[in-house]
Image (cartoon, rainbow, N blue to C red; front, side):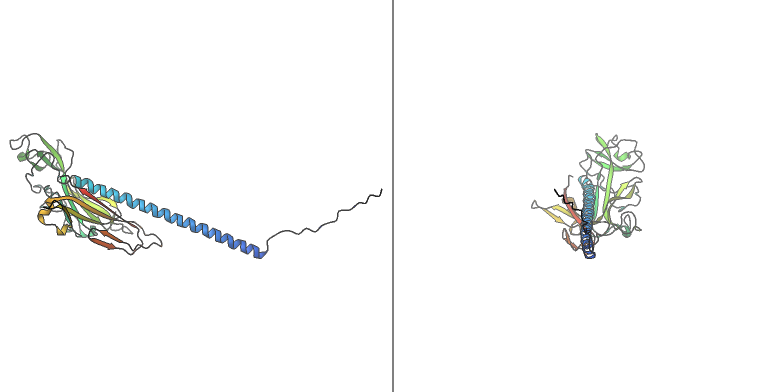
Length: 316
């Protein structure tokens, strides 16, 4: 038997690779995919920042409304007194007083000014006031206090029949509960007087950029009216007062539409706060119109904003 041996013949092998054209196409596709991913990431980051700013505006605005509401609920609170006596301003001095003729006059439990600053010559210089309404609230702190009384604080001595303001360390003779002019029981309270307004800045006029904020002047140690930051980002505040009418309805009026006797008939207060972000959003244009009571405010800039409102029914 003849066996035929076949030798292995060498075969040519062709290497599989990319041509220059294929490499250029692959690079272009890769760049397209990477660009799309970067765009998605950038949009996601921008959306995240927008949500964070919206949440910040919500939190700051809600806090500001709660602060105003808390003061309004105690407006006109007289402790256990049923009558204003004496119904007059303090007979002692208050530093940085807003209005020396009405400070501590609790019967004037609520007052306001419409889009103006009535205290530019006293406690709120025009450099500290931006825009919007000014709201004044007076009443007693709901928690009674006991002696010894501080010479730097303003108090109200309250009994069933009458009450009066004093400054420590002792209660004035004419309003002392141990005297014959007062009937027991008697309680003493700190006097609250608060003036809300919108400032053009949060920390100082030197900050950059300027971030508007809600401030209040509050009766504090001294006694003195002291400025307190309430919430940053408040750009405008508008107030309407619900005045009880003879036909048993409530009509909401701006401060400049209120008659002198209308302030005693205020049953509720409507508040609008326009919140503004501290920085602009890249590529964002805000040309919205915000309605605050009878006022419509149109913007044309890059600041995100949020409008909040509430109604507070007065207790006293």
